[in-house]
Image (cartoon, rainbow, N blue to C red):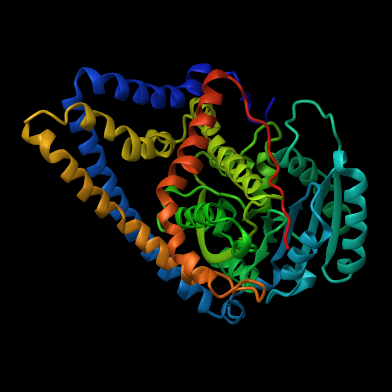
Length: 496
């Protein structure tokens, strides 16, 4: 049973709704293309016009966020922090859940934290391992203690036991266990630190932070209104190994980063995602991460939103944290890993029945807020699954069935759709140009000619949009619809 009283299967209709919407669209589009192709063409044109407006909207917010990102990375946040009252009291508690990763991955993350422009004596590390990886984890933990034990204020090591009741093995249950152990450690050994002076960062274990991340985070925490009612979302870059991964993986990785950037430009609809930060007081109030779900990184925001009756938000951080792209022993392995990663992210569909269930239990939250979150979620999941197929595949069928008709709309439809798609390609060109400015330095082992590949890889976007966008989303929504619930898939992390 989850801490908030909802578990898979509790409300089957709301679990099924997202999948029903997609499959109804697919089936009706196919059937009606043969029965009334004219009206399907009208629908496709209207949908494509909507998509062009959405692309333009996306580009406007992307450019705005990118400009803010560039300005933020150039500022001296440690110098700014020196002028903020109370900032010297803030401590950072960093959770690093790990499972089977090489110690070099963990070491790289800890070195990036150590080298930040922030006092290490106010940083506490939580290395959270798994009992099912006990031997390997304990060796890593001993190496970490030996190398970093005297660097930070404290290095806390936790090991999540296997076989605990009401859990899904994965990151959420590991973090839940670690959080409860940290409460005990802080009470016994760091009681001088007030809860409201602790900011938590929950990072994927391969996260390399920007040198000014904790200075910037501390500045925001000390200056935003009511900071204990806000999480903090940085720019998620998947770039640690970007130069050596397959082109489709790179395109998908930057696509995720650009989505995050546009969300940061619209904080009123922002959720937490991947590596991010939050108040320790909030985590204690909600009982830590849920231990029986897959998408704990975004669910923790909604747990806080519900706990505080809608009085919780996410503050954008326009500094990056850089993580690994998916990888594999072969090119195909990397693509399979990418598909599984995207399907796990698309499993965020599980939030919809959870919100339906929990909103009923929280009458103090305004109907406007409830509708906003439900609509944004439903519309986002629907377009994630349906839009690529409607644009690139299903739109061709009714045209092929009516090619001999003399109707003006039918005759002009190919020309109209072609120009609409050309306008929509604006997003591709803007994304490609911005991606070049966000690349890390090219390793000496990578040929200079890779710059050409980095430019022309964006022609793969339509294929990537379908294979690693729509299909994983369809897979996730269909699994939720039929009650075949997804477990937590750990992304392999390996660097050359």
